[in-house]
Length: 291
Image (tube, rainbow, N blue to C red; front, side, top):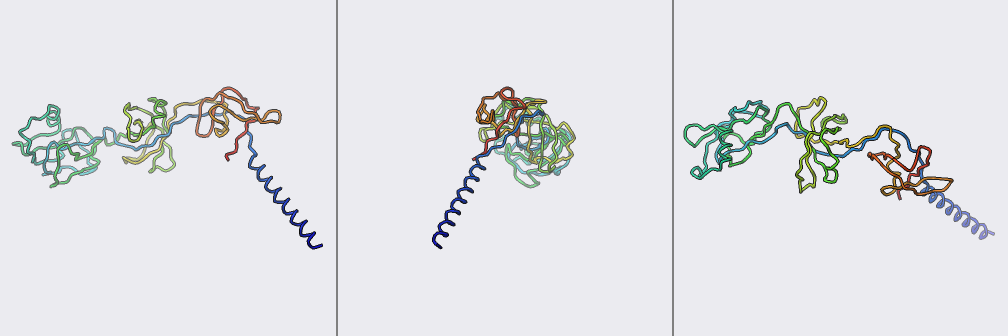
């Protein structure tokens, strides 16, 4: 008698386990259904980069030498032609022929004292001194950057765009910008310049944008994340993006059965997909479960 009851209990638990497994499997295979809705949709291209000063550039030493005097400090505003450094020239190549472009540079940015052993490095623009690379008494070398200068107030958003997306970008397109220093606040900007040379190391292109609203921070070289709006559609018929199967198909429920159909798509956002042809608001669209 005990063996009989023991056997029946084992059968009961085995059946219960099978029932539970079947329930779990059925639950895993269950897919949600949605209906298409009308809403505004925006297609964006992601970009990352940093904020730089407009006209940001380095000024270079014109020969090997030593800094005799430094007339400025970091964060100083300077005028075009203002003296920045005095350099003691120690170059041993003074008697060699100097290229014509080098002569022009010297004429623009350096005023010599008596003799050829000393000269001044002067500013080539009105701006702010952001970084000084050399201090008084330090050695400098020909064509070595010694100061970073740029506009005091104007900022440029320097962005990097993947080569697969660069053909979508056009000047004037709206940019939504988020920076590390501003937290979750989003600022608007506009694309102003697209560079044609690809950076081979990163396989990306440079795109510049400028703020179209007040950006209250004067910092530069702070990192940014941006979304460039490359396409938009008002009152579009959309479904969740994860409903799309492949590039042009959906699973729908029709007459109690699941059916795979072809659709024509339009604007694609990170979350939604515009449907141009194939379904309407009454269609039951299946959201496939991810295995």
